[in-house]
Length: 425
Image 1: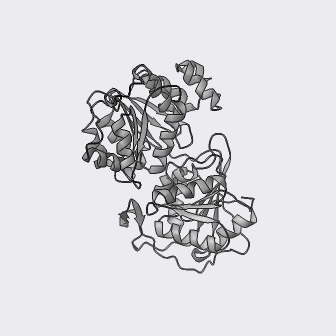
Image 2 (image 1 turned 135 degrees about the horizontal axis):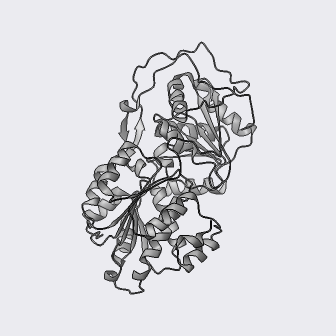
Image 3 (image 1 turned 90 degrees about the vertical axis):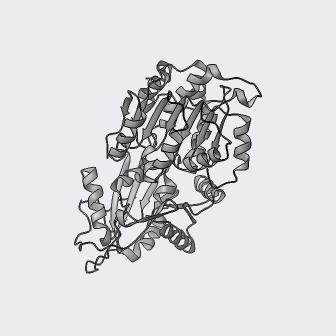
C-alpha cells in the first residue's frame, strides 16, 4: 500500500515523498482515513511506529480550508491542541507539524516548561492554529490569559499513558473543561491499560479503535540479552561492554535521577563520554545533551524513564537497562527506543540478585524467558545476600521522577531464567 490511497491531498503526498517515505506504517494506514473522516480515535502503537505522522498529516488536511495569510491574530485561533508529556516530545511533534505542513499556511507553535515564557507569549498573541503543549506550561498560559482554547476543534493526547504515569490527569481534566464540548478527540497510547480505557470512556465519542501492536509485546526487531552481575560491578561491566564491542550511541536507563547522574559521572571519569538527562537538568542542558548524543559527540546518554519518553533518535543501536524498571511495562517503552523503522537493535539488561523479582515480572509480561550470558571476568558471586529494593508504591515522586525508599522484601534465590550462550552485543 502507498500513501496515495489514504485520502491525503496532493501537496501532502508530495511532502511525504520528499521526506523519503514510500509506504505508510500500520498505524498510519489505519488512523489517517479515520482522522480525515472526523472520527474520534483510540490508538495504541509502540514508539517508533510513525504515530505522529498518523495524526499530523490528516489534521493538516482537515484544516487546510481554514488556512489564511491574514496578519490579524483573531484570524488564527487555536483550532488544534496537541498535549504531550515531555519537553523533548513537544519539540519533536512541533517539528513534525512544521515539516509536514510546509505547504499549508497554518501557524503553529510549541509551549513547554524549563525555558522563559515571554517568547511563547509573543508567539501565542500573534495567533496560532496548531498548539503543541505540555500540560503544566499550558495551564501557566491559561493563568496568564495568553491562550484561548474556546475554538479548539481537534484535541490530541499523545503518549497518554505516560501523562497518566506522570500524574498529569488533574491537569488534563482542567484543560478539558476549557475546551468546546463538540470537537474531535484523538488519544494515542503505547498500551491500552485500564486507566487509559477509563480516560477514553469519559473523553471519546463512539471512537474507532486502532491497535497495531499487541499489548505487552516487545519490539520484534530487538534482540534482548541479560547479563547477571554483582550490584557493585555494574558500572565496570557496562564500561567493559562498551569498549569490547565499540558501542556507540548507547542509551542507558536508570530508575532514579541520582543514579543517572552518578553513572554518567563514573563513565566520564573512566574515559567514556557520557551525560545524564533528567528533569533536574535545564532545558538548554537537555537539548545540548540530546544533540551531542545524536551527532556522536556524546557516546552514552544516561536517562530516567520520564526523561527518555518521547525521544526520537534514528538508528539507535543499543539500549541498556542499567537498572530494571519498577513497572514491567516500562521495559517495553525502554527497549522500544531501538529496533525502529525496520532497523534491528540490542537491548541489554544488567541484572543483580536484588532485581530477580523485577526480571521475573518482565518475563511474565513477555510470556517468555530472556536469554542470558555471563561475561568472563564478571561472574556474579552466588553467596551475595540480596538487598531490599523499594516497591513502586514506596516511591515518592519528586520533580516527576522516582526517588527510592527502602522497603523489606522476601529473600530471592535466583538470578533469572532463560538460557543462552555468549554472543556479540
